[in-house]
Length: 230
Ligand SMILES: C[S@@+](CC[C@H](N)C(=O)[O-])C[C@H]1O[C@@H](n2cnc3c(N)ncnc32)[C@H](O)[C@@H]1O
Image (cartoon, rainbow, N blue to C red; front, side):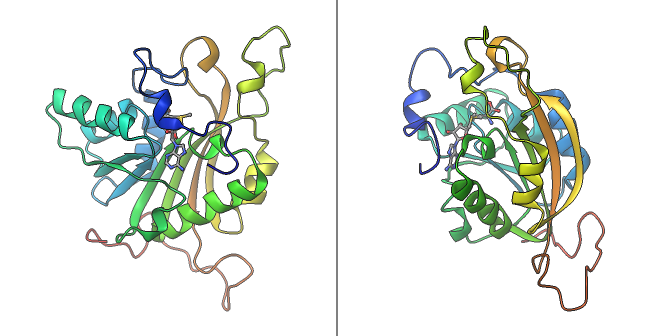
């Protein structure tokens, strides 16, 4: 993908051992953050679900979620994980950069580590636009993004691999298209190279974009004018 360091994501999911970013368990703190910001009865989409441990947990908590990933092998894993847990969880192969062509808009979008896998300014801007188009008016995007606050330890063998965005970078990319509802510090994963710092963020879609309003912001409640059958 343009702007990404990994070009064949599916290949990373075809080996016996999982890719290094996968924890093989849900990230409970981030999932609780997601559940606080999304209305469970309205349809949400997780992009870049990977092996699907968070998607399965979120669906178990009652979130009306579709899981997705660009990698077909990851999506197969999500389907079998959901099946093993006796859960109905739609899981689809979706390239988020082409996702605006989906027929439905979503009330919520979840991403943990998908946005931050885009490294160039151009690809990050395009990603934000895609999420904006995926969401219905008033929809909320909840994201976990690698933080530039992570210590720069030269002895850490993984130091070059962490995605690191400053809050200033995130705000300048996102704020024109989204109202910033909440940002807090978090961590990506539990062990080893996955224990880097993150920003956990909730953004609400602006429509029209900031600077394009005729009569200023029109505040909405959490679900805005969304309906369950978007
Ligand atoms: C760093 S991994 C995070 C996986 C998982 N969310 C987690 O927290 O462990 C990034 C994920 O985004 C997926 N991905 C990368 N580019 C994508 C794209 N254009 N559309 C959808 N998914 C993408 C990758 O296949 C991978 O599963």
